[in-house]
Image 1 (spheres, helix red, strand yellow):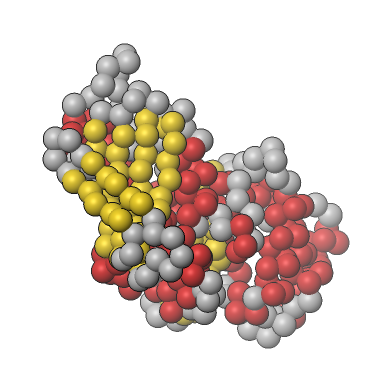
Image 2: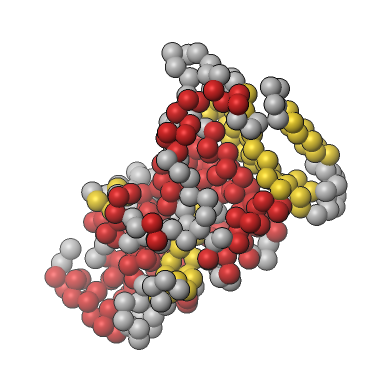
Length: 303
């Protein structure tokens, strides 16, 4: 990186109408700031993306979302870096991840909350060779729907044609390569409890408040997939799910990877961050081709 580029970035920061934000900056100035973090973005970015592409997408997103420019630069950069590491482009229409501006009452600043979308969460899960398939569906009151837990879990869903009525449930199903399966069901009330814990859910930019029903349905499906993640094999690629709902900063990353020890617990602003998942689901992973009996005690799990 040239000294001129660094100087441009510093000049850009001084031009901001609010210290530490990108408010009032032109696109070239915003890009110059991102360029100073290019090495961090490029360190662990997947082959299908480039640092230049991520910087361009982020610059465009900020120009189209004025409230992001009002957020702290650190939280904005942190979210962009984490999106890069996961191989996601922060484009809302793709549904992989969302950068949501919100007022952090603890810090007194407007910050960016990094939220993984339904499509991003499914993509993370499908990177594992332990899963044959994973998906989620929304259920409406005119659909035919029933499910049972116990020794022989069962789930039946036949969507109604035409008007399907009011949303009542969301469920997620995972089928393992060893022949087993797991599913989770959450009611509208269960999902709303989780939604209310998200401090960014009040933002007009939150996917929860999108005027398109399909986007809201994806958030409902994402919520139940997160719950299902507790019953998936430990090798399933959900390590980075802990960043869902977090306020991230450049200091949270080392050598192109997220350093979980560098994230303060106060940086998480959305509930349902999974506790020590590797310990909880360790018993579900088959050994030497054998089917584990442990998941049978879990809800909706059969092996």
